[in-house]
Length: 195
Image (tube, rainbow, N blue to C red; front, side, top):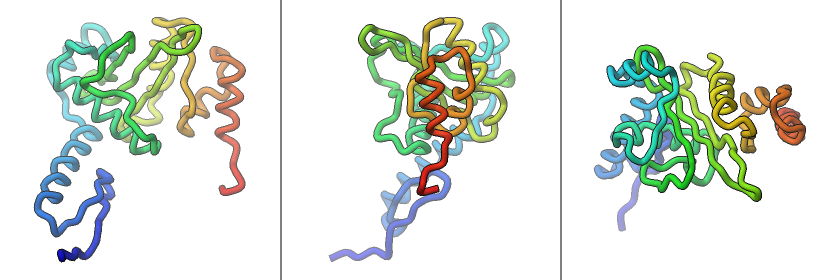
């Protein structure tokens, strides 16, 4: 019977692994690199060129280069981990079925965030499904720019709950969302008995 000292959890990438096992160390290194590359992106000339031509939002679709779809997928994975969801909200190989996805890019060509809008419901309506921004860029007004871009494309779009605390704060006082959305965001901001 094999016995191991224990499972470790990497504080950077969140990977749970047994350090004594060579294969698990290899998988951890790959995931750790992927997390660092996503959270601390390097400038890319193609992204800088896109920003100069069309601005901060780069549409991602099934025919986009694989490396761009993978970047968005990595952001969706970190979004899932941070908020504790069961699944990531974007997969590089998922069928499009009317969904819209974007990378947020900076003037120097770094991919600093990602977001998606989805059409669902009865009757069908557009919903802002998710947004994730790298930690060093948070608090820089990205939510407002994303919301303005989405409202310009889909005037009746609504944000999909639940919200992270910063997004709940963003939507709680807005007059361009439904009363239901404002109330839901406000409830999320109120402390619970466990707080």
